[in-house]
Length: 93
Image (cartoon, rainbow, N blue to C red; front, side, top):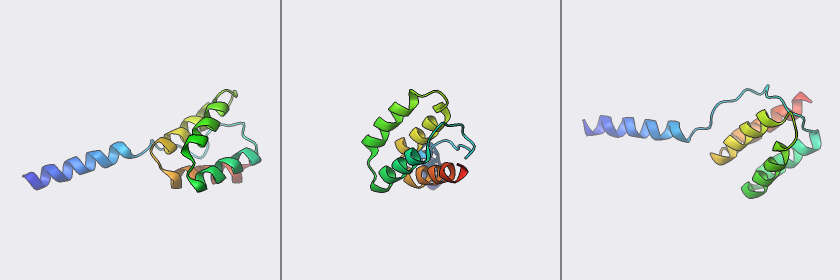
């Protein structure tokens, strides 16, 4: 019984740490050089600077979806998902 409860609790914790899933088809008004800057900041793991830049992007109409998706990934420290999403945006240009 204890083993089953432990397994269930571990499963619940792992689900709560995952960021929500977003499609690569989020709307945005980002220029390729801006996307590259975000990729570079993610490569060095500079979370605070990424958050500041996301706050700036949130002020531009048309960026709400991408800002939300990127912010969710950064808050979960999902750098792989963050980078993958940005690369997808970069190739969509």
